[in-house]
Image (cartoon, rainbow over all chains, first blue to last red; front, side, top):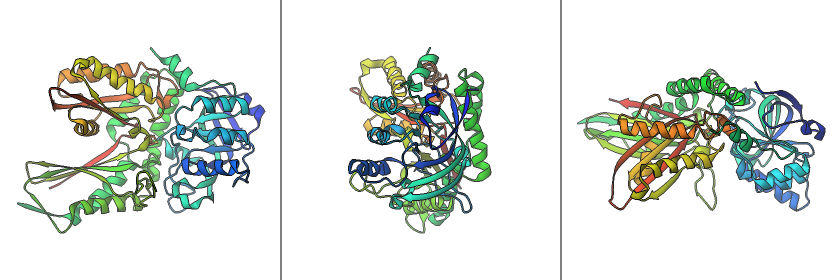
Length: 184
Length: 282
Ligand code: SF4
């Protein structure tokens, strides 16, 4: 079993600096959802010097477009989407205080550099284990861009949301290190 | 001549869409357990266990295993002695997809215009439908829910005869290597060889319908599948790309005759959800 570490949002730099790639984290607190379309709008706001729809200082963004919730449930299935599509937008958000991104699959060198510079991390959650992850979501409300449907920005309240540290604050990348370790 | 009223097809397709998204298929469960025993990476084992737990929870909670409930790819085998009556057959299939995705709380992931507007159709239609006319008087319908993450890692290559079987193996292994963690490994690798540019892609997709606990019926191709699988699982990508030995659960090849000047090869990647379900209407 990998190391299990509890984290709480808003995230603090000193907590993030302790994380190493491969650590399992259980995240609790507020997490914001955003996919491609929402990212585009967020970055446009940053560039225009306007206020974002949520407080990005110490925030975690989860790359997800959930399935519809059944009546009485906070959310439907909610696993990660592929992160590289957010690569063009992530550095601009990291520069204004974003501290963690959650998704699946590797990130590009520019995002990794920006994480080192801003002391932020990228967490990999498990693609296709979307009911397990949904169980850790206690509440969900749309806070911006309702017109985007599944891609609207939601504020999630999560409890012990499971994920793995994929990029730490030192520039390590599990997608390289892990593969090197197990390649034969 | 046997008559089938197309209105009978709607509830069948509706149920196929829902079931394939809620319930993991037995062959996938067997294979994941098999690989879990061999997985040496602790993170990898953790992830495979979570995937198995997810199967159980999805079935209990009546929720889709993954939030990307895919585009509905519908394969029809229509007996030539069947007369379809009562309306438009393809519209009936689409109505089944519509009802399945709306009533089953599945995500709607289809955009109308692929480039300019990309506006969601809001009911996951249109489905992608392939029809084969076959002998007999039954109608077989298969619904495959194809997620975007894995589909995006697929590729067609017009290879040369001189590339030979080694060239084919290298291409497939390299395609999975370049995919890394993006298609939610462990994956199932569908390979289509021969035919033409478009035909080999369809073969690759159809090859994914074979139960992954079954070997290729042709021992020569079965050996090729096994070798490719072994090479893929030496890449080190592992579950979700975080490192490990379980990168693919199976490789499945379908081949057909082709032109003397050509050797088209297609790789269609599927994630571990590997969702497809069939029903025969008699
Ligand atoms: S690739 Fe499969 S498991 Fe991964 S997000 Fe897409 S549908 Fe889900």
